[in-house]
Amino acid sequence: MVELETRELEYFLALADELHFGRAAVRLSIAQPALSKAIRRTESRLGVSLFVRDSRHVELTPAGEALREHGRHALNAVAAAVQRTRRAAEPQDHLRLVLKPGGDAGLLSGLLAAYADRPDARRVDLLFSGPADRTAFLREGRADVGLLYAPFDDLDGLAHATLHTEDRVAIVPSGHRLAGRASIRMSDLAGETLPRWKGVPGGDGDGPEVADVVQLLHMVTANRMIAVLPRSLVTPTPDTLTTLPVTDAPASHLVLAWNARDDRPLVRAFVRAALGENGSGAGAGPGAAE
Image (cartoon, rainbow, N blue to C red):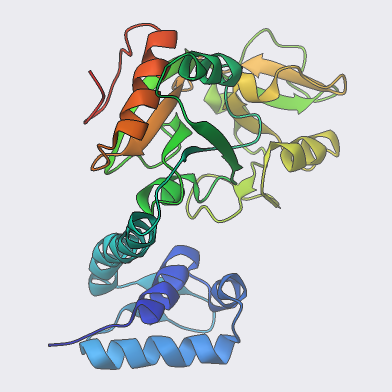
């Protein structure tokens, strides 16, 4: 039986995400030659080629595509097993909620108040995370519940319920060619520079990398890019910038999410309080509390 170490999977997945040895090595904090050697060793052990590469280009083979899909699930499962084992050894007297800074659409205080009113309420610790790893916090057990944005965050394997739906707007400098329009369509943004989100592979952006909305707003102000975001993330809007409704952009949904296999009373209580605060919980995903 061929066995792969978790570190080998981490190296492979970093390169599969970045498709660039230099960027993947920086992400992993290792030297590029060490990463190249590790990938060759993994391919040798599996007896397949995982990447097609030359001096200018790296892409996944069909075997690499399969390992990316299944390897990520395997790595998440290992991380979750470790975290849950540690948690089982010590009683938990608080609940951990992960979200992006400012990513609550103004609902957070109401959710916390509704939960605090329950007789079984515990202390709530807030964990702030960038765009790449909020779902990992939930899958790996580092957080109990999270506020995520659909369709941007990967909700696979997570139970979820929609708390808030809003439109998406383009944010541009006040002197931008589109700034005087009442609304725009996605086609109006052709040729514009869009951001790349740190740690998030793929996407449409080809501009500078940003880690959060604060960095993005500075870049937009400096005329380095524009962006399309849920309206609440850019409200209030700085005086130097303008927001434009994008009429054909899919709506954004703020969802409460938790691990679909996590049925602890601690989690159920918070979910029920949150859904009671925001109506019936329409849009609830698999495993939503009744």
